[in-house]
Image 1: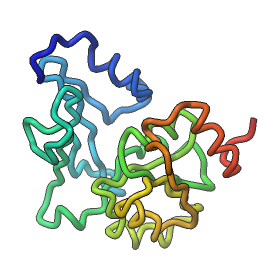
Image 2 (image 1 turned 45 degrees about the vertical axis):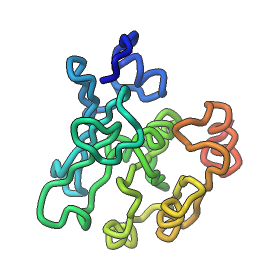
Image 3 (image 1 turned 180 degrees about the vertical axis):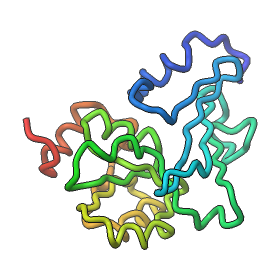
Image 4 (image 1 turned 90 degrees about the vertical axis):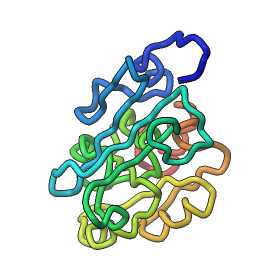
Length: 187
């Protein structure tokens, strides 16, 4: 935690970032440590890891367990090849599509519009490939305009490239316009 005085609770912080805590069974808040934990599941319903989010930490420290803004951990010997996602709670919203995003806050934006969205950590969806090929839904990726985002696009039926802002940082109006343009929501 930084030396500055904390003026908002974690729940208030997440609400400001438009993640509705009550929507999820896989989000845990630790106010004392100032850590949000997002539980990560495989597609058989097994808990296989977590991502810690420390809003007050240095964003530049990549995957540093106790000091970085984000720290992601997967169980098992094949940590990088594990089929794992966050956002399975949203899978029932629709049965014709599923959206894939790079991170939790991006997926949470789509959940607010009642769209099924799964976050793939480290943005390497390659381990998901066998599952994606048999999934009877249209796969729609929402990606950043960078090299990591391009990896996600390879496995999708179609992709939305966020050119100006990440999905997690976009306004409701921006997201609504994108979703209407793609025919994902009707006004």
